[in-house]
Length: 449
Image 1 (cartoon, helix red, strand yellow):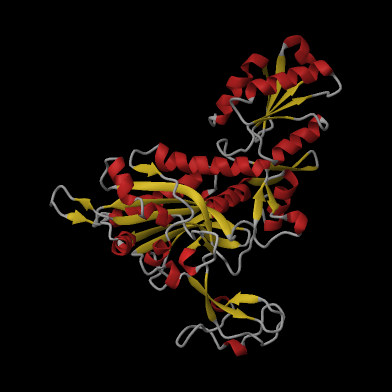
Image 2 (image 1 turned 30 degrees about the vertical axis):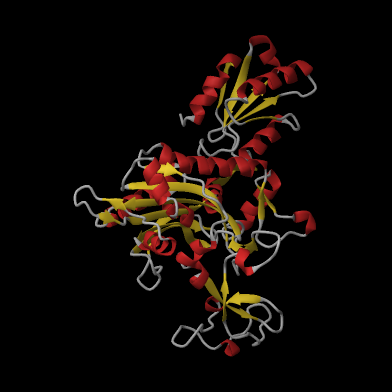
């Protein structure tokens, strides 16, 4: 049975150590989340799978890790200072704040909606909304000991600009002309007005972005290639194809710099929502940064001898959204011997724990010693846990619920024949194998066999 409510996943994440509410002991802070022990492993595995596909398996994309704090002129050039804003209304009665266009308030003359005074507050129902005003979504901070306007900087609202300003550095040092890409994973920050749906929309999040630079005229072809490549990545790592779809942006919703954009959408419990966007950003960004910085951002076309500003195809995914989607899609409930069994059928590469070693009896020191010794031998090679805190049946259910691929049980017979029982997460099939073969057995299962 699939997930029908996001609350199911929120409960699992809290109960099993995937994700906790940020600053929970102080009552929490809106839309911030802390990744627990298993959440760290899962999210790291998602990022590693993305990196593997984006630049380890390709020879035309290079990794980057740019700074979060950038020269403030970067955000002037990119348009974020002037245009990265949402229209807001406040309720004079209950003091809550809302996106004007999300609740039917007209933002200006000729825009959809009705005047703010005619719209009831979504929270208290009173018609006490203020007129819309624009609110910049960037977090502002200061460099230096004195809060002077000259020292103002911003927490980056996206990782893309760090790539654009390093275009010439990477092109020169890697001795590569377009087509080539630059990819990075990093934190971004947006002062979202209406965050929510667990980790789907937050104010602090992690992006997985690539900017692929290509000669003008080849951009449409590269755009479609990247759309197909990125769609297949989600399927490759376990998301059911029927839970994914492509949606092309209409002309009325395209960003001002975009020639075309496709969204990969996932069927979340709250409905179809964006998982990743793949945009054709044309040559807008490099031209803007060249204009504002005075630095030429172009390459020499060997065929024509002319300097050319490349077009950019941008596959942009959220590490948090992807992790959430993989969790939801892997969640499965079934009845086993009239009891509910919850299992996370995560792809082997994504599973936070690959193998759990379990002694059948924790009051038998020789069993515990053998099991701990086996866990210690496996740990350098795989994410491994040792657990003896419940009966074997309960231990199996606990490991199923967190997506552990294999459980290895050391029993009394193991002391005599040095064989152990290996149980598979998905099939619950059990094999009895020599303890010396466990490492190879786990390695084979992790490889997907």
